[in-house]
Length: 64
Image (cartoon, rainbow, N blue to C red; front, side):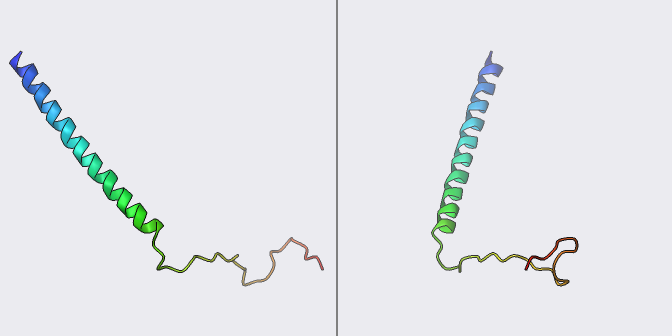
């Protein structure tokens, strides 16, 4: 019976250590996401359509 009780206490400690570690990760992720969300230093990303150096794709008729 004493072994079961000691294992129960070990599991309690492991649970609370894991809970504390998880909460630290959640707080760190929240801070990182907030910094990235409100970071205004970078210019906005402009997406362009890639063009082929050979011209239009063969097989597609150009309309004029």
